[in-house]
Image (cartoon, rainbow, N blue to C red; front, top):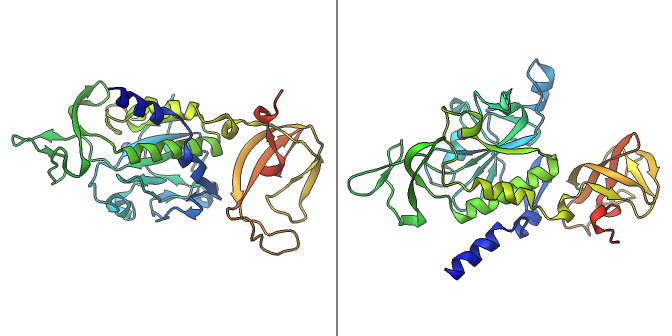
Length: 323
Ligand SMILES: [Zn+2]
């Protein structure tokens, strides 16, 4: 009992090593320094298309969590989203083993929500990222004790680490549901934290909350409150949006060392960080900076009435200042 409680406690702590491992660079996700596999779904609205037509441009404000409601074999849902006939996609698919595949760039609209509304605003695809967790959805129990999803497959409790539980909720109705794997939940938490931080998101929700009566994903075993809590508990050094400059620093039009300085922000200035992003830069003089293993952090900042990019290393979080 003691042990169970202890491991639970560690799991709830937000912002683990995994979060440090995830970075977003120019709308693609990197883990441990290498890009997460990108398998582009044709089912999306590109940035150019949404700007050029009457469709609303993608302006992410939150995250919608989903189940794939499909087979558990790795890659199976990713392959489905590669097909035009799926008419659906997500920014990320999260496999049972915790591995991620990105299918839509983070400045493009994925097609995951369908008819939906969040706090009265319809068409949630316009303003939310879509994350799909591999899970079969509602199952029924057969006379022999096995579990049957909507597709031709039978699962056995305990086989391949699968665990089922019966649960009934107002949003889901009743059924037998497959528990998410620990790996899936941990990577989901880290990814939601990273997206929330880098895009200054305001909400996290589920498909059943934005399409009530029509959708039941993710299933009732999903620890939604834990994920929400972890987002609230992002360590302050990763979260703080108010920052100050210990020394005079150039503010630049783009995150690069080219001739693009807008102004010099004076030492002691307090700034608002609008966005953080990693970019690979050329060192001054044109040579590639070989010393940097990972791309460099840049912050899009607001100061006085100006907006521009400042090198991350020049900025200190107000929380780090000490009293
Ligand atoms: Zn869904």
